[in-house]
Amino acid sequence: MFLLMFLLMGKNQISIKIIDEGQGFKEKDTSRIFKRFYSNRPEKFGEHSGLGLNIVKNLVELHDGEIVASNRIDKEGAMIEIRFPNV
Image (cartoon, rainbow, N blue to C red):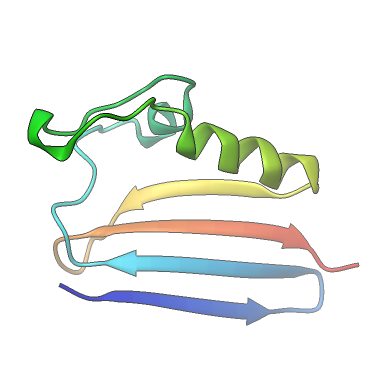
């Protein structure tokens, strides 16, 4: 499995893309993964609070950014994109 990170700097925004080749998100509505206490991990993964992505979303929004999660369409895997205004 691999993990790619891209940093794209445009005139009006900065975008960070994180892409992997894992199983992708089980949720069709990927906005749900950012809800507080949400978790859809296998039990063998270990203990977790379901707060991690919610905290990331809150921090991104605190800086006038947005975060979007999706499944890749070209192959298996997930993609998370974080966008900030370029000030």
